[in-house]
Image (cartoon, rainbow, N blue to C red):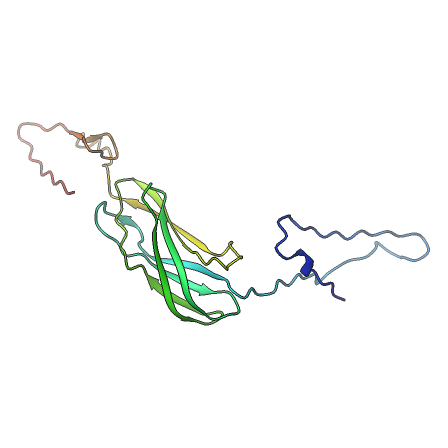
Length: 193
C-alpha cells in the first residue's frame, strides 16, 4: 500500500515514522511482525541546480596571482534551465564573486562554467573556497554548494638545519627573516611579491 505524504512538503520540522506492534496470545504467533522495503520517494523539483565540483583552483596558490574559478553545475530539477546565477566566496574576508551561467541545461545534465572574473588569493596560509548556485526559485538548498580547501605559499617553514625563521609567520606587511650564516657560507635569498 502507499500513503500520500505531500502534506509534508516544505515542512520545516524533522519528520519521523514509527511502527508500533501490539499482539495478544490469540492472533499472532512467533516473534511478531517485520517491515521491509520501506521507501519514501521525494518527487523531483521543477527547478533545482547545484555545484557538483570545483575544477579549479586546486592545491597551493600564490598570493596576488590571479586564478580562474571553474566549476561543474548539474540540473537536478525537471525543467530545462537557461540562466543560473552562481557565486564564489572564500573565507578570507574578500567580497564574493558573482556571475551568471547561460545556455541550455536539460534535466540531469551537467555543464562546466568558468567565472569571467578571476580570483586573486590573499596571503593566508589555509582557506576554503565555496561555489554555489543562487537561483531564487530553487527551494532545494542542500545540493547548491561545493567547497574546496586551498592553501597559499606564504610564510616559511622553520628550518633548523640552516637556522632560518620568519616572524611573523605567515608573512605580513612588515616581516623579519632571521638566519645565521658563517663567514665562509653562501646564501641565495629570493623574494617574490
